[in-house]
Length: 345
Ligand code: AMP
Ligand code: MG
Image (cartoon, rainbow, N blue to C red; front, side, top):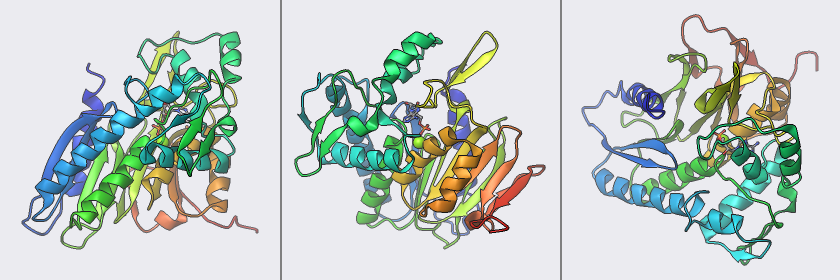
């Protein structure tokens, strides 16, 4: 089956769920496009919505052309072929790399945008999947170190050590979601929902003033494990089920633990972040997946700006307390609320 069909159908369902229940008769303007290797759907309300969505599509294609690892004209491609020489970036690419590096540091390297040589070795960039041998991985791991990336924010000059290659796939869609919602808002839109391949971002409320209901996919099936009701928030999920291959009965997915070079296997099968910032949410969805359950909960307890829904590999759903009143689990889902302060403290 076409590898995009199931995610596409899932997106459509998710969108129906998000857009339904509007009490107004107004229907949204919508646009669908394929960019950043995924199906995207944008919906906006208001008289200027068609025009604003056309601008939003152009903006997405512009960012895709800058940030793609495999388009030869992209700035990321240029960086990855710069042979240790400095290159000057556009504001978008420089700002995104700057923000990504701050998430890499904040998560102590659970996110590492210099992971690209490892992602390539597993075949996730070409769909020619393979399990690299340990020696190859350990050699490539010596190239992975976000702290060796130099970016001068005054001149947008990026210098990567020779051999290092970066991959913004963990965070680019979140940045794009922020850029699109800002663009829609500056074109007079007050109510919109965009779905960038599972990264959902909302602008304002639904036209009737109610919250958007965004469904979170059950990582073990085709259903949803619940919904979150939000306004002005990004809802971003990372899961091993989103891209993987099976070899000799073992499943290998696309989220790599930079500590080992192997797919992260730390007790979580899905992480959803709810945040006012799509960039932060996307960076953290990948990071918390790598950290695993205990470290992810500790990280949430010690950092502000987001809430999370974590799914453990036994199917238990952990919901942080800020979402307690807005998360509605599907029937049969076992939910544990995580409090900011550990009991006994
Ligand atoms: P996401 O779907 O946002 O979790 O991003 C996953 C993508 O980010 C993968 O397909 C890789 O391209 C890239 N990636 C995988 N592991 C990491 C990591 N530990 N740090 C940064 N990027 C990663
Ligand atoms: Mg991410």
